[in-house]
Length: 256
Image (tube, rainbow, N blue to C red; front, top):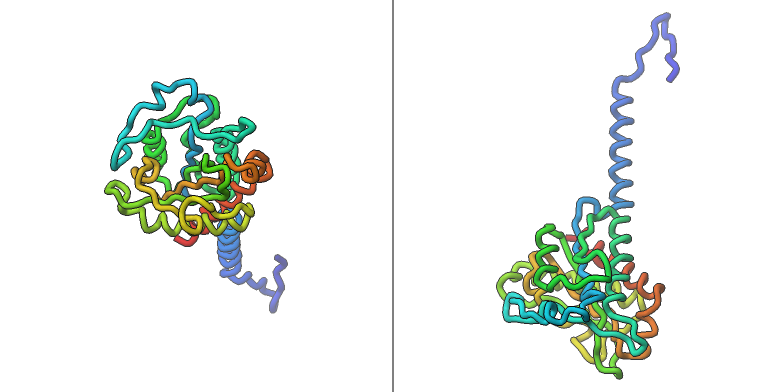
């Protein structure tokens, strides 16, 4: 900045200007970070249900585990379409797309499995992985094996069973955000055979019973229905599902 001579004396630049500019830069940078990475500092858990090789280890996945209220199997193989496309593959693909979306928004993402070529982990271990990461919110990704005549998605939300009492109310808010975003972004209708208007409380699932963070499980569609299955197997739909879940999680986390 040029200095002007006044009466032969060089006038000093106003001392507050550099500080003001620095403050403006800091404010602008902070605002830009919030706008581009609204989930900075947040931890999100993603559990892609089942695993690609579960069918090879029935003794492992059939073993009973305590889910916070009663017992259930360590895991299952999941369902598949009539054409043989597995739920485990669908779940994992959507999880990867979702993880990328959330990381782009600044979140730290914790996945319960890193590939689709393993066995397990058990549903109790999956819950523990996300709990131990101190996640701010989490979602379990599934696709249903419902009646072939039934269509649509359902968001399952926890019921208070003791270990999860504190997260039931916030999970209901997250469930509503997921339902709204998923319906709008994917065009998948709410389930015609499960839940009420796309929502279903459940008290028999370890992933929800043992959670210590707001958490829901979404059945993204019915793999046994021809119309749903034709959507679920496509990368385009899987990406749309992930974008919807990312939007819902962002809405929940930014507003909470």
